[in-house]
Image 1 (cartoon, rainbow, N blue to C red):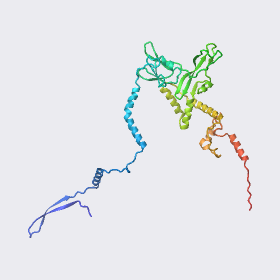
Image 2 (tube, one colour):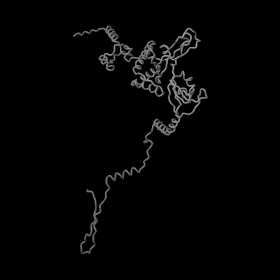
Image 3 (cartoon, rainbow, N blue to C red):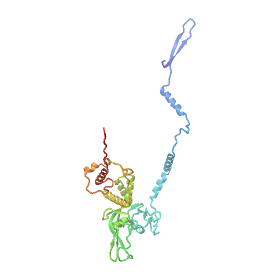
Length: 379
């Protein structure tokens, strides 16, 4: 069959019976057939106009956790404008009275004394309260803004009534002994600033001075020794105590390395420096010094645990049955032999990798206990 594109209409003129009929006019009328695209569009319109109710079995279910996350996101978006306004309102400096003396205007807000202590203090009461709390972070409420100030600075008032900052000396919080000489424990000792040092805590470095106690009668002086520092969890980086580390720095770094072995030491040091800078303090930490002191601290801890017979780890090659493990592929011993390293003995010598002398003695012992079995065959 062929497609029909048009059809013809003929007009016949009537005539008498004796004459033949004549065709008078011919008209061609085109026949329009819808195309394939038109059929597809019509089908789309029909499908779009239909509404088929979905059954409960075909409806995808949303988990409870996803629903909670969606609700939390909606609540946060609804509360975001109010949270922003409250955060901006918290930065507004309002006039307050000193909580200590109840009379003067407060110019210092301590961030570590809240809530039970005295967070708002005047210039006269602030040095008295925080003279021994050198690790408290404070902010000055002058010039209409909260500005972080280091412990070595305090707010003063000049003759014109203007506020300013003045430097002060901070002492390392170590209590002196009750008696430093034979003049008697009832003497009124004088505590003066001693050697300057840098104390590094988990909140960053602090510029402090070691306390020095002087007897007013015999002029005997006392300053904390390395034993006194260790008793209060301070680890000296050098014998001269130019840099002191708090124990929490090393323990925190050790726990972070155990949780994430790929953690960079430089990143940890930068975090300490940033915490110091954000609270108004300045100071940098030498990465080489930190690395050396941390190794010394870890080695002393290992020796202490070894004396207490604490097992630091259990070797998988020794428990439950003896096995042989080759570690050359991981340790790259050929690189160490090629570089020749250093002549200084390792602190952990023989702990992780056995010494050559002990390995040779162990092999000789095994060989000496071996028995040779000869098997003879008869043909």
